[in-house]
Length: 133
Image (cartoon, rainbow, N blue to C red; front, side, top):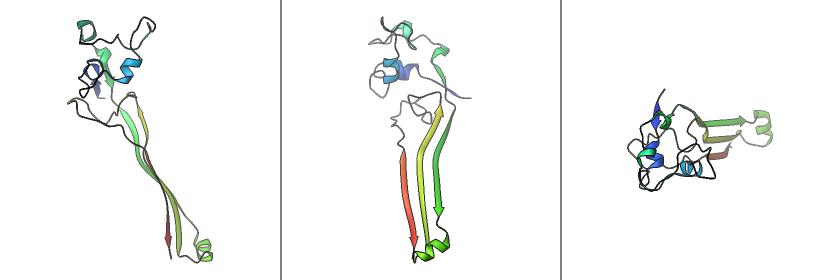
């Protein structure tokens, strides 16, 4: 099982690809109105209370991903012949269909250890028809 320390990535301003604290942290931070928050308060600088080394910031990075799937159906030859074609196949292909992970706020496949730029995975759906005459 591998894990990732998300403290610097999430909590220290401008440490997250030179941007501010991330959306996940900001929306789940401690405030006087949200005292049962998941994360400590946000600060404009890495104050000592928010930057103590702790296993609180370690997140399990195990995940399961359905990267690509294709479903297809070939019309029976009797029906294709009646349509005056040799064969007819319809299909659906999907990419990045499902990711099960403890990390819901970033792609678990990207490490973030070197503060590399990372973009969210896009889901791609393709529907097609193959016709042979």
